Image (cartoon, rainbow, N blue to C red; front, side):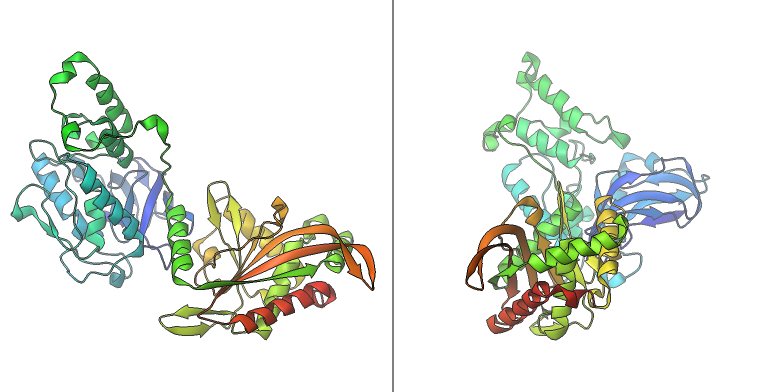
Length: 478
């Protein structure tokens, strides 16, 4: 029997979400064959099986998350009884032990934490879920338990079954997702959507029979139970309405579940906005020569090799960073780290998320190479085929909203960078040149700066260099 564990797909990953199982329970699996699609904080990646055999048990179903190192499935030779056939008592014991198993990572033990350790590290990814657990504790009086970080939880109603929970440690994550309990002490498996729906409609999960795999309570089960409550015979059933605030009607709001990537982006940008002291420097750049250069360049090459104005900006920024290494830096634990490599993050907005693929060593690439690699990076990112490495290592970022006719905006710094350049649209406007009013093409850019890393004079000088390169664009192609 081989255990399939949640792999580490990026340096910042703490938990992963199962998007899709590519094999069903009981099917044969070959080593190296795609087994499961996992969503990390960077990308969606198909993970291959590292052993051959029969997929005897799926431990973590689709739509659920698990910490690094947690067992998500079992691959066996089919000779042993599947784990799903355990008696209820033994199943409860296995569930109670699950936090301890989940805390043992497959590759790097230091990232995990034994639930009994009071000084367990605090994974960033668990913080929002810890807040959710506290909110659930305040409003829900169902039989499901909520855990206090640093306290104890009793999965089966007695001290013999308790698990010590460290301060927002890995065990807290497992407590947050622990299923509800039935009246006889056995534990039910409930999807997060079903649990929330049950709270909104006042449905007692202890009285709901699950129709999902392994008796899991689904959204449909809760909706059916809610309909039964409106019938006369449901009037005698005990309710929780006297013990909780009146729920808001479901028609007034739409709850949007965040993906792992969306959660990570929200956390990182909030951390940047509230921890890095931002200041902003804006300049207007004459883009007449840059527009002409782009037109001439594209007329001389194949359509597949055409460059964009954003490619010119990337090249100009990369060359400017070679002259101002203090901008190509980050704040880390009270120190400034200046990076040797110049890796430009290119912000790409999609309907449901923000992604920032990274163009490595941009200062060493030709304009044609920058255009080619940028297109490939963005295409992979948009089609969910990018690897975790495509999102790592940025030292400076660019965000361009010019194609949406945005004149000017300010961007939040993308950690761990200390600066990001916001690019506006190129406008046709009257300008004064040699004492005459003539038509001109102007573009406004705004540099957001982490004031801990460099100061206003350096920011202004860096922006001046970017402006000089774009106004004399032949330097970008030589």
